Length: 256
Image (cartoon, rainbow, N blue to C red; front, side, top):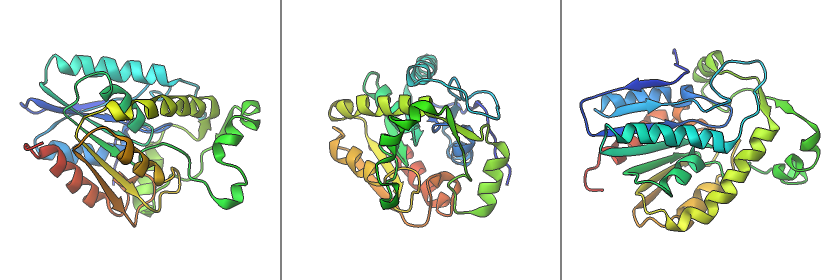
């Protein structure tokens, strides 16, 4: 199955657009199929790539969350000149970006997929992964990126064929953590109707992060849906059709 990677726009004569925000070190391929699904439901779609994520390279370059946010915010402002309703769909690190944006501008609805709050901790790490980032991580520029976190072999191969990077830049990861800490303080003031989807088998982010956002988000209209047979990139894994249906139904529900 072919996936697209790169900024793209899919338009319908509609008042609603979905702004897709990809993950750290990733790209629009992570939500390529979801974007097509939303477009098939009559929604316009805008997919962007952040600075530091917009050109193929053997090693992921350094970039910072203010750069990503500035691009997402500028895209939002451009869309607001055309569309009355803007929905945000974030994946992984795209989720704190979406939340930070929703804390400052009107957002009609928001979808958070595999939200990055903290890295998944396993007992054999000895210390939380973040502890290494702020200790020996200062001495290392980047680490190899292993296979993409997708259980479905065919979709993982398709994703790896279009992914831009083979490493993770550690200063960029630390910047993402800085964003997360800021967003935690903003959650109670965010009133946007929100759907959160998280797999219990996510090998990258701690699934408890989805529960944390759900509990602290100020919106009275919020849902948390759990998956049981997907890894981190839920939009390309075995339960992707469930994700497409849940997201499509939530965004198309005119009662919210």
